[in-house]
Length: 134
Image (cartoon, rainbow, N blue to C red):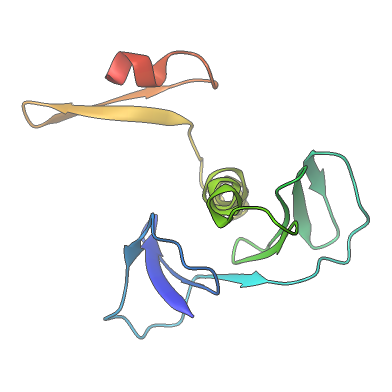
């Protein structure tokens, strides 16, 4: 298992997540567990669905993600999918749902720092946040 700090939460994952900051020093109980597995939910088209256990994110030709109790994500990658693609949706939409389940407000944004001050730009995909930050 790999250990990370994500949004201030100790996270353990079966998947190596090189995009995240490692947490080798901490031995605390993890706040989030990410595991690989087979998800028993019926096949569905791409999208986010409410389930008895939480939420199911389906990304066609990439993976299915079961997000439960703001503490667990089960990932079922599609055969042959590059792990970078699996991680993209895990660390984006699936983690956003987990944060929402914890009662926090995930925002889709970008930020910059100018003279020690931080400025954040939020909005929907394609609104121009990255262009403005650049």
